[in-house]
Length: 343
Image 1 (cartoon, rainbow, N blue to C red):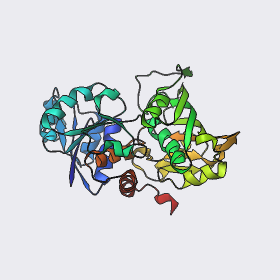
Image 2 (cartoon, one colour):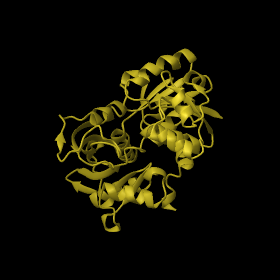
Image 3 (cartoon, rainbow, N blue to C red):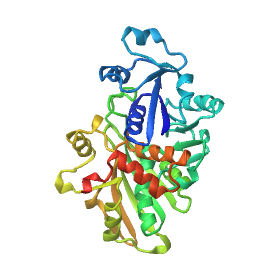
């Protein structure tokens, strides 16, 4: 049984812990954090299903005052695991890497860290094999993760050599206040980092993109224009077939009530998914259109949870649990229940 720890129990860390807990061939040894945040307090109220360890600088007396049990230090947690999932605030993970190296423990870092923190910039479908046995992986950002899922889906089936994207990006996560209260859209200089990151993972695809920040919190929407490899035309029917066969892509229709990003969030809550999470990206069947030799479509990115499956894939790659992408993603999907809505 592979032993896993999680550093940082925030927006992503909570979901990483839950994701590991669901993997029947992995053991969540514990989580580590600095302060008794609302997330930690909620964990305590739920009966402390996960063991808590304190990072350097934490004031244990504050946890004691709230009756929150602690199992030891961050070093104690690192010493008990095969791999750490680091979802610490940006820049902290790079410092934590020194501790992982000293202990001889592998680690996977989230999208907020610089690419230089890891040996491989990783995606479970597009370059799984490059992560086999590697000590330090870094996940792509939420937008890049979902984008690559869809582009890789078409690329594997038909071949893709060029994409152009427009990202309509939520400005902050639900509950965040640090971005302020806004009533405006903000454009970033092109090309967006997601397009550049896609080319890092899939170097055979030429990508460019524009990003627009929007004053919403539940999900991003990305439009993609893809060009078939060598000029081969990908028809609407071909694209739809490929997307429907992908277990991390949920194909939906406007007429069914999936009108936008909020529809996915509400549907996830109605399903009873913890925190209203969805691991899969949504893809509107109505958005798939042909434009000359190109195919265009739109996807919804549930930014808080979309990277969790690919992180589980990263554990499988780093520890050589499965030898190839197909078998690894199939195991992850099985334990997370991905694709079950098709039955």
